[in-house]
Length: 403
Image (tube, rainbow, N blue to C red; front, side):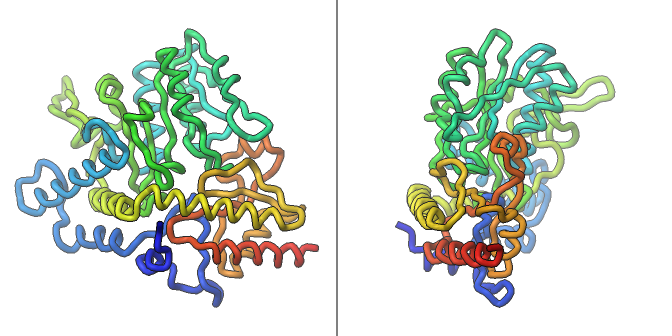
């Protein structure tokens, strides 16, 4: 069980006030706040052993390299990957998916091949495939939603044919807060010998991830959603796929030898890590995952599930409330009457309550729901029931203003 009172003391930003009100930060699906230990870890790099990693023979470079590769090992353990060289550092989930679209797509996909995505995907798991479609002539097949706003698995099974080459699905919807049955989705795809990419941006901070259990071929997540700095992320890929794929970027680090006639590429994972990496961010990511491990991902998941269910119960008491989907993760999306989500968000902001409003980079899903956007409250380890109560009171106040 989490000691939320003690956890909050580890996050300096939560001590501030907004418009004279205590900050109630409920925008964690967009980005989480950072504990002092993560902030200190990044500062330590720049104050004690800042030097470019790999190939350097001097002391600082060797210390930085060791710390970065230790972070890679931490990531491997955190997600249950078989090998550290299956962990590729990127700028985030978006770049990880773009890497797969470019490298896997460029290696294996041609005109007429098909990629399956779902109706609830974030733009980062839609647009790269559309760009690939425009370049190569592939076709996108879409898993529809049921009336309950879950993925229609029966319809999904019918999308496969001899041209299906890849399935790309979000683990947890960033809008609906719904956890998809990705293990079943992966099993179905593998029965057709089709690999699967899982967008884990909204699942990795909240539930235990184990690549050996899921058997995903690719898995992407962002550091900044799991208490780490911005601009750092991970692509896990099975060794057989990463070895077979062409590189994503060209330049330093990703090469073994270069001449004007020919270039040979480095071994995994460096083949996909061109240029100087954000080693400070990577090291801080490792510290963030260690922080999560110290609290227990199961404890965090139970706490956030409790907050989500409590929020749903309390929000449903508000007249005109519409909650979209049946959230079982750590986010709730809603509208109240005819109040525009931006207006609701502005009023809540002036009460010190930070929520996300708009289409949440999921415009196709908004089109299916027939709405322009929602208000989204999302939770993390440091949130409390009292903050949910503050949210409910703020919404009620806004409702009276618009009445």
